Length: 234
Image (cartoon, rainbow, N blue to C red; front, side, top):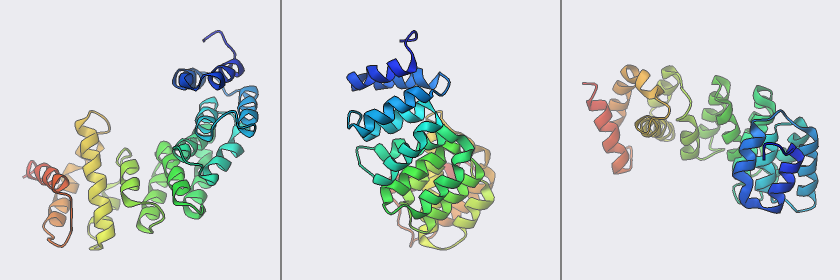
């Protein structure tokens, strides 16, 4: 596989979709390739590459020649997780230069699944500006709160910003903030992102206050894990 050109790798995966993981990993190790991106765009237009595969591989190829097609796939919202591949692919292709476009898509895309695909792209960028956009979209109801929390849990969020949500008194914001902290704890327990422990001293008192509000409905498992985390700081 390593001796094949990127265009040959595209042909290989088009002939056998089951090889997409290995091909994708190899393409990501290589420099962006205009010919490979062009071949994949042509295959997508000819319906030889399903949207999810085209979006994912165009992101792995990383050439600007594939950006417009990936964006089109995101807006078309064809399903089969194509949108969740397309958002990160836009971020892979342009890096931080995709921020403004992803924010526009997060705000204005007609379909929720497209907006949530853009959210996944912003999550890949992982910048403070991306996190702010995700929080605003979630509190405005443009994306589902649990979707936003799952993405944001992997990105360090300033305690000040989480504190604003936790002290807001608004159910939607409390639900979002506690979900972010809970998912971040699950990630930390699994050895992934551990930022929540770095900010424990600031976050624990605020979470304790929220848990004391009887009107806030919360899944028993989530409440129990948050209570256990808070109690360890006493």
